[in-house]
Image (cartoon, each protein chain N blue to C red):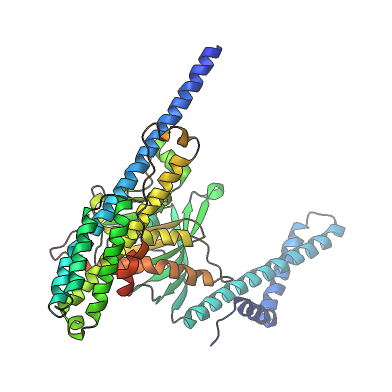
Length: 183
Length: 294
C-alpha cells in the first residue's frame, strides 16, 4: 500500500465514524424533541383543567375571584412561553397557584364532597404525576444528549453540524400542586 | 414469632440426621454393598489385594450413602425453612410444581423446570413467585439459566402482548447481522433514551400504538426506577393477554431470603400500575364486545 492509499483509507474510516456519530446525534436530538412534545401535551392537559377547576370551585367560593384571576393570568403567561427554559418559570408559578386553589377548595367541606370536584381532583393529580414523569424523562434525555455533544471528540464537530445544547425544564415550585394533592 | 434463621433450621436438620438410626443403617448398608462390589472386583486379583478391594469398596459405599443422606437433609432443611419463612408472612410454600409457560419468555428454552413456589403474595391477586429454570441444549452443551419469576393474572386484557426485555449487546448485534429475531413481533421505540438503552420493547405486529399508549411517562419512570434499584442480573417484564410475568436472572437461596422481600418491594409499583391499568381498561377480555386475542 502506498502512503497515499493509507491516508485515503484512514480518511474513509474517520468519515465513516463521523457519519455514524452524526446519525447517533440526530437520533438523540429527535428523542429530546419527542420527550419535549410529551411534556407539552401534559402541560396542555394541566392548562385545560384550570377553567374546569375554576368553574367548580367558583360555585362554592365565588369571593375568591382574585385567586381565579391570578390563575387565569398565569395560565395565559405559561401558554405564551415557548421552549423548555422559557416555560420553566411560568409553569412553576402556575403549578403554585393551582396548588393554592386546591388548598382553598379543601377548606369547603361541601365542595370536597362534590363528585365533580373529586373527579377533577383525581384528574389533576394524575396530570401532575404525568407532568413530573415526562419532565424527568425529558431532562434525562437532555442530560444524555448534552453530555454527548460536549464530550470529545464529538464536541469538535457537533457545533459545525448545528447540534446545540438542549435546555432543561426546571421544576422549582412545580411540584406544589402534587404536594397539595398528597402525592 | 421471630423470623426463622436458615442456619438454625439447617443445624437442627443435621442434628436430627446424625441421631437418626435409619441414616446410620443406610450408611452401613452402603458399606455392605460397597464391600460386596469390592469383593467382586477383586476376584481376579491376587489374594492379598482382595481384602484391600473389599475395604476400599466398603469405604466408598459408606461415603456415598453418607453424602446422599446429608444432601437429603440439606434439601429438607431448605423446604422446612422456606415453609416457616413463608408462613411467617402469611404465604404458602410448595417445593415443587410445573413451570408456567404462558408468556413467550417462560416458554422459551428447550426444557423448563420449576421449584420453590410461593403463593398468597400481597403484591397482586393470585400472584405466585417461583424459581424457573430455562434449559438450552443437552449433554455437555447444556446451559441452565435460573430466573426468579413473579406470575400473576390481570382482570382484563391490557394489551395482547408486551415484552420488555433487557438489551444483550452481542445477541442484538447477532440478530441484526443474521436477521434473527429473538423477540416476537414489532419492536417499539419510546421517547426515553435511558429506557431504550436498558430495554428492548416489543409487542404484536401493529401493536406499537397500543404499547406507546400504555407506557406513559410515569410507567417508564417506574421501569427506570426498578432498573436503577435492582442490582442483580437481567430483568424482564411480559404481559400476554390476561397474564403478567416479571423475571430476574437470579438463583433463590435460603441463606438470603431477604432478596425476595427486596425484589417484591421493587416490583410492587410496576405490579400496582399494571393491575390498576387492567382494572380500568375499557375493553373486556371475555369477548363481550371486547378486543379478541390473536
